[in-house]
Length: 276
Image (cartoon, rainbow, N blue to C red; front, side):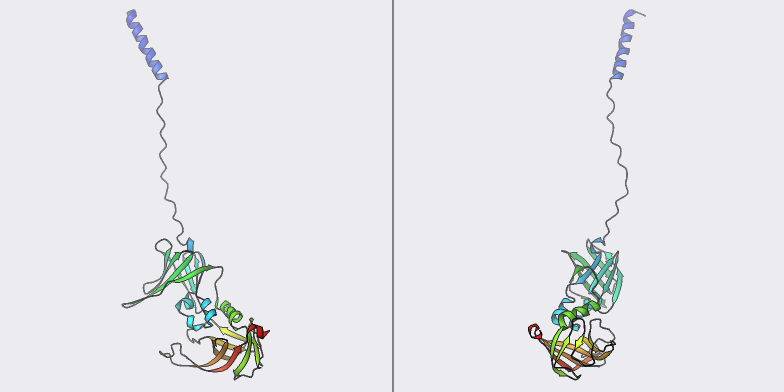
């Protein structure tokens, strides 16, 4: 082998060795992203969890001193809405119903079935609620009623206490009474009565019964809690009248089956300064 050929061969081998020692390694690739299951969707009922109270009940009742006039379906069935999970309990002065809620758009829900259902939607920290009734070719849709959050359900018993404290409590001058009474009687915020012989307390009925809808029910009670007389109360300014009533067949004149008759007692509420 010639010296020239051997030198060329050694030179090529040296270049290969040098090239192999200083070659730039391949740039490492980012590992492929793992395929993850989709994140679970947020609970659509989360925003409405808790208790919601109708804005108009019992405020209108306490201002107007009239239970019956404000006993539309919303206070009878749904003065309070209580969400637990996907269930909503509707309760009022008459009875309570429970329904599964179905989410619709964001912040919107529906309760009930095809012939009668209720829509709810969240708007500016308020829950709006309306009823739809479908009968044959006729569809009736109520206005939207506003609700606000509360800590507990407002029961009829709680409403009755508010009526006693904010509407009835005070001293009254007797103007007329079929039951023996002093010239001044006192109705307490705790339902106690002074000035009516044999009467220890009074009772205001906020939880009316569909089978006997006595408007603005009121009664006197003895020391054992027995009813001594039942009436329908009505305020005209500071004048309290306790009316009699009679049962009637239900018709357009008496949709509740009750006719209110002449007052059996009339009392004038004295101003606070005069009552002291």
